Image (cartoon, rainbow, N blue to C red; front, side, top):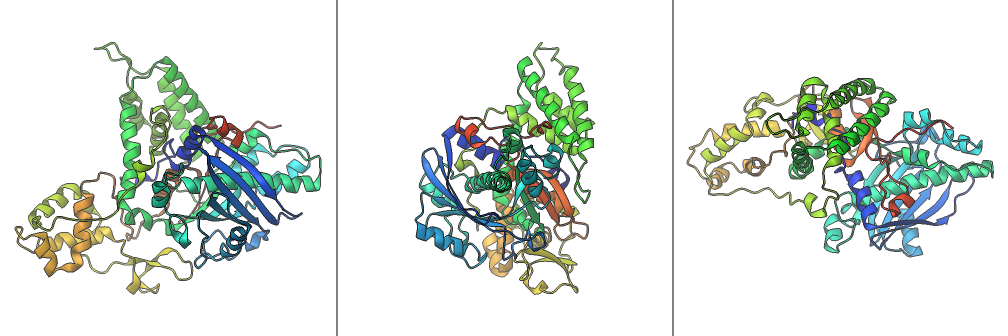
Length: 548
């Protein structure tokens, strides 16, 4: 749970986008485009109909065209290249028309019944025109260009789970919908954005030249969907600790099982092929504009070392004569390569975990925090000392007013970090300073008789109620609290942002600044006809298409 390690993780087969792809490939997937009314500039309407395990869904896209200078990858934007809605079932024409209007209002719009996701997106400024020009000229786009960007469509939001009156996950779970797992409806919307990007580029290319070629399957599979995330993403991790625990525990338990596996020759050969693919992927990987993470060249070099370790053969257990466990490789990596390569080895090893689909119930969580009122203050102090000993290195007990604070920006409609005395709004600070609040709780607990019950303690000090519940409930969870201080002067948000995006299943982490990160999702995911046949695509690290 140290920030350096959380900020080094990569997607796994358990990440939301990858578990979504595996789920629909297993349950059965069908997709068709039932309407395309795009004009010569790509303005108009496109409607897709999908089926997952026989359940019908409809994806409406209302397409526009902005000048690149008008594009904004922020929630405060008022126009986009396209807006979209994912419905359960088949909406009426009146519902489609209403949604087309309501989508344009980010905050105050209201979803029609049966709405699962609202989303907005822009075309890639760097790649979209290149792909259209290439197809119109009768050739495939340059693979190096595809690699440099990675997507045709870049999303700015996926509103779901109750926002704007949209159906929440509990409803999807109650009706037994096949996409009731958290984030799976967003992942379907994202997948359909990818299809729309391909269709839009082909449409525009054919208007220029009726003999324009289509994107090759390799090029389509290699591209994902872009995403831009800002610092507003950060408070989510501290405000939803039990959810974060489930995210990480799922991965760690699977990795613990993989550690015990004794791979046979066929499994080792398959893992070696995954390492080779990863080396090729990272040798070609461009860097972001702001260096926060390891370069692709460094990761590729570390993976080459892992490949040589495999070639030498995992050491055999002399006492038993049995082949070594994957634990030998994991332990070797922790000693010999950088932390990002260590975590990449873990991600690749999880490909051999026998758990396939993540069941919806595994990630659903009740985030209520509670405590036993009869528990003694001394018992809680002892529990905190045992489970949160590490927290003392961040802040002193009962600290003075801290230099920084977090607030909800009226202008940007997102959480922001401000400096006291410089930025306004400290009186409305968001309650995310859990390290400082924990230190205050410990100081208050130490000021009373240890035999006092928590109930009596809180009668005298009711402001501590939330932190008593927080400390008691989270002390039993190993992965609930990231070891970081959001108010520290040197706090860098990029690592915790990357952690969240990796859980969603994103790759190509490209920092644009210290507070803005671009990434790509669904890169390598199987095409619709492949998912229909149960094929998931290229997995975690897709191979770049060959030049044609």
